[in-house]
Length: 193
Image 1 (cartoon, one colour):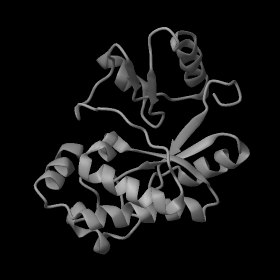
Image 2: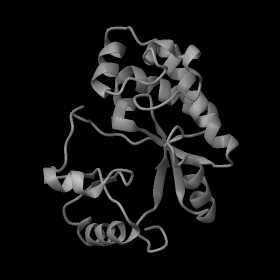
Image 3: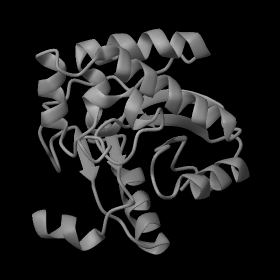
């Protein structure tokens, strides 16, 4: 994707299983902008479960639902200072790996909740990060709309490159934002299209 001129930036999930591999790939492509894909709804906390107890379950895992967390934030049961601490920890984790973060977005666009967005702006200013993905998400799953295409599953380099090639030809005409989630299996999304 990047070597072919299709991608200009990518985001990295610090608590994902492939973080170390993503760091190695990023370092081989120093001109590729790398953003933090802030995640507080899947997997383990980087700040440590005891430090973010209002946003993790009894097993120490983030709540596996953006709706659950959004509700907790809205009704005040998720402590904003814990979300801020987790964001800070995730940025630090990236920095310690040698990456220079160019922008911030988030898993399931939770950074667009007003309370979380304020924290993202505050913490990112501390690190000199001034670019964020900004959109008005419906906070529901979607696969395709007039202006947004989300592909939640791609497996294999060949199919990924074919899909990117296809969209690179039509991006200027009808698609304003293309979101790829290459960690999921391709056949799952094809059943939903």
